[in-house]
Length: 411
Picture 1 (spheres, rainbow, N blue to C red):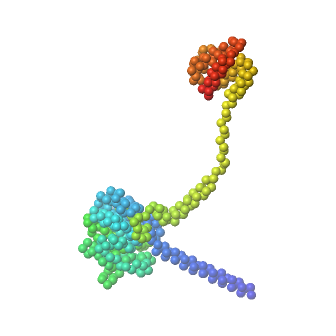
Picture 2: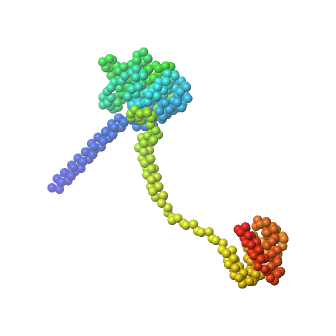
Picture 3: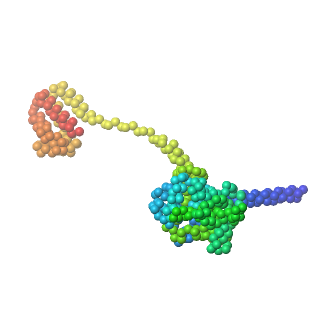
């Protein structure tokens, strides 16, 4: 009985383990398939759908020419970059799933090519206005399941015989249904022969002094395609039709992120496009909000202002003086006023009051800012009071006024 239970438990464990392996393989296969169909065409993306390999190799193919990454609409770059607007011999490369551009962008792109430059477009769905201006048409079928293998075949008879390259698992692109045969040269096909012969997917259109290259197989620029077998040769063969030593090579990183027709998008949309930057932005805003909520409250109550201390010494002297004045002892009151005045001079101006002479009066006048005559009048009045036995009311009042003015003017 115990052995049967052990066998059943062991079988269940093995069955669960097998189911987990199958589920893991299925999820891994689905993740790989999803990773293959997700094509960013970004020059920094090292995943299968990125263009890191193509971007790196292009710098070596053009004698080490550093590719300038353009992150703005073509019109804005064209108007501000003198090399794009006035120069010739430049190469502008744009790899994207869909090309949506404004009317002004299309006009400037074609003007750029007409001035003697080359415009290389590798897109699954070209802009409708661009197709109209170039006189081309593209098949309407567009599904990643329609062609299970991306094939790029070159028709130039001067190339090596092995001119067909493929990679299974990624979309193979569309093909042209109408061309302006007077100005267009077919450079490649998708390897399929239709009712009217091979289906072209890579062409060169002579436009003014320059050329416009249109490839409907941008998957041939992805890491997944180029790293398979000898597929890296496709990159060499495609750019072999461009200038050997271009004046400048520009790689577009703007239009591959547009999901529909629109006039422009701001740096804010670029910031919100990447999950890491988006989360960093939201985290920063959340922390900023928390800081405002908690730090906006004062941590300490407002300390009230302390009132300025009033100088009540003069009021005390006036009160005391009125008391002595009512008693009729003018000389005693004058002596008290002299003592207070000399103490004020010593503490306020740091002068010795032992000798009240003209030199003292001159020094006190300079330090206090009082006229010399006013100070000399006070000093003479002090000598008069000290030498007199009786002080009249008029003299006492005048002496008081002189000292009071001294206090007021030297505060």
